[in-house]
Length: 260
Image (tube, rainbow, N blue to C red; front, side, top):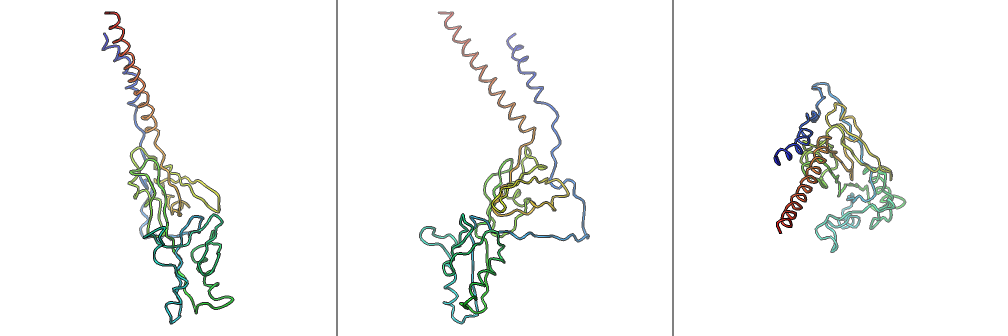
């Protein structure tokens, strides 16, 4: 009799958990073959943000190498950061403090625009270097991937271009419980945060402004309704198990007291 009572208690929960699962979309599920159509690939130029660490290398036609070196930082940081690449940090005011040229407002500029500003300061109003060449690079390009992926965390890349598919791949891919059709991208633009929704199974993925990620983007993969349902069911089972344990303990104590 006791067995049948337990069976009647657990059977509805079991049946509830055995509902048909919804089909989970796959990557680029609706894309078609575009071979030979020659679609143009456009890369949006990154804009410098607060917190970026920049490398600014200066070269010129000077015959004295030591003259060029006056405008370049050493290869690595000092005692506070042994082995770390030296660079210029974009502060909370959007400025960098160049060790020879002073304060430069860098936020909102592209690398090319910042390089042009540095060249201008090297040649005007006084020519400090002859025909200088300036190369600007990001030293801390990274994005963060959270949610239903193989492994969450921050992804640092040596280059300066990363697509959302590459970021998801580096994070171990989206799990079976992740939604590929509603991936959120959190981004800061001109001091304001914005959120975009990306459908990784859609054929319009490549024209999304969030397909190519920007530095400091946060990619969030939400769980499917099935995953949330299973999590709710797990919590229910835990509560039932805890309740049954209490009932069994109470029954055992009652038997002990009755016998005594």
